[in-house]
Length: 242
Image (cartoon, rainbow, N blue to C red; front, side, top):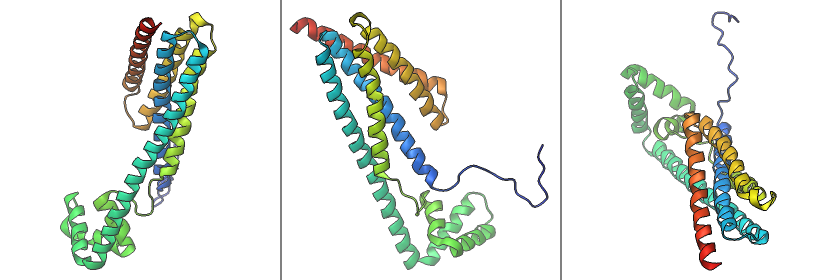
């Protein structure tokens, strides 16, 4: 067992800067994009495959779904994260104005926040004063708003991560439906999708410190349901129009 000398704090290797939030945001967008690409494209190509044996029709539908879905995910992430960033900037601007116009009231508010967390009023006041002297905006933004004024979510990072992940996820069912012999294309696609969804479900659970088994079962069950519904619709439409 490693000992440390008195007064020496043990070393920690975890990252504590704001950049980890940006990386997690991109990873979250990537996992969601991959999952959506797998499920939506699998449902689309299986539905078309149930209606026709023409590989070119399945390929065209799959590529159209891939392109549309990837762009939709990218735009959706960009708009969503941009809105979050604009909201954070507006809150920070408001906090700067309040610190400039009402510094004493803001100091009292900060002391009240720490007192509400369990510090004695005197200690809460001392903490508030020292943090304000060191970095008033940072202290108030963290305590009142829960955000870091020096770090904002990057909409382009989330958009690119989501678009790339959707594309990679969509390629799996598209290749799985096109490459095998005709009698095996649906079973192979279902098997490939189940394995891929199990992986994304596990990763998403790990990112959120959730129950991996429950998350995986939920994601796989949702994917199987989507494929079953679209296959049934494709078979029904193909029978009626064929």
